[in-house]
Amino acid sequence: MNQPVVIPLWLALIFGAIALWLLVSRLLLPTVRWYFRRQANQLIDSVNRSLKLQIPPLSLTRRQVLIDRLVYDPRMARTVAEHCEATGEPRKVAMDRIERYAREIVPAFNAYVYFRFGGWLARKLVRALYRVRLGFLDEQAISRVGDDASLVFVVNHRSNMDYVLVAHLAMTRTVLSYAVGEWARVWPLQQIIRSVGAYFVRRGSGNPLYRRVLERYVQMAVEGGVTQVVFPEGGLSRDGALREPRVGLIDYMLRDFDPRGQRDIVFLPIAINYDRVLEDRTLIAELEPGTPRRSGWAAIRKAVGFLMHNMRLGLRKRWYRYGYACANFGRPVSLKAYLAERNWDPRDLEAPGRPTRLVELAEHLMHEVGLLMPVLPVSLIATLFDERPEESFSVEEIRAAARDRQQTLMSRNAQVYLPRQSDDYAVDVGLRMLTLRRIVLEEDGRFRANPAETRLIAYYANAIAHLRDQDPGMPDTAADAVDSSA
Image (cartoon, rainbow, N blue to C red):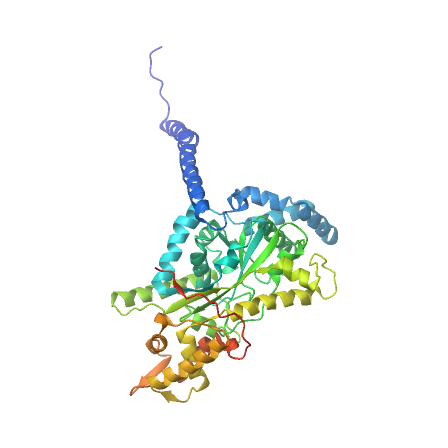
């Protein structure tokens, strides 16, 4: 009765592993989850009290619930039925594909990651690289956007830093959701991107089933009040100029929009410019025919190499920030008002001229963005060397030419940013950036364009080229630029 029971060591290890698993899964993990859920809820309550637009409930919904809502949405059911009838594909196979697409698209927003990690990282990164300025901002007009409206930021696309800069500037106002290309679908970057509310998009996908899943998700997000950020150009500008807009995501938003319904869609134009675009040489190189498309891993390796190079410069005390990064926020454009003026119901997909009207809307929004483009020191000086690449100039001649260009642009109500409100200092800042990178060469106190960098000079001049021949746009009530790093 009191004899010990002997069991093999391997069996004891199995029993021990089972007991440990039960302890962790039934006691420790629920406690840890409860703790972090409590911390996240406290953070959400705190953030909602400070945000201009509170975090929408859709962003706080569990990812699996969103996936199920998308997969089993009645409209998706009709799409599956039509697809199976047209192709003969079994319904189970089609549903599996839709679920796979939904898992690929739907984000996994985490308020703690967004505000604690993402906000901190965005602030540190943009301040480390640039002198960040917030130029024109009509707070009163933006504050009139009601809770029954879905806000859509419409932004020009100059750099991958655009995502970080806009998120940093909007951090105290609202939570943003981006569409990110497939280049970022690498571990662990894709997990971080999903956790800050971004969703992945296959650029130029011709798969009709995938496009319907993406379309329905965008509509659900807009209906749920999630603030969207769209880049109508569809990709980074390779030559520095504004590109012709594409209508993909905007079309998705309009297909289900009721002009007489309760919820409005309000587009907010935002224009971004940099004294230095991190990817400028890479983007220019892609203009060459036959240039292979880089993979996500290649982009990350390039970024890591760039980071290491700058760290080496910092250790040798030869590193400087990349000049100014400035964003101007325009006046909101109500979709209801826009459609009422043109007597157009975008839900009628077969209406004659619908594609043309979509392009007109996208061009209207990009025109508003173009009017807001910040004129920064590098772009201003680059125009001189772009127009007269064979000539050399003294500092005084450059200052005089810059002043003439500033006056011309300001007479057209362009948003010219003058650091320290000084014409001369603006020239010094822009010229220093160009000479440090040897885009402009100095010889005997005179400056000339580097013949090997004419395309790079044109790249920065093109950022404001559309302002030189365009009629006045924005009124003269632009607010003084704000230093967001203060």
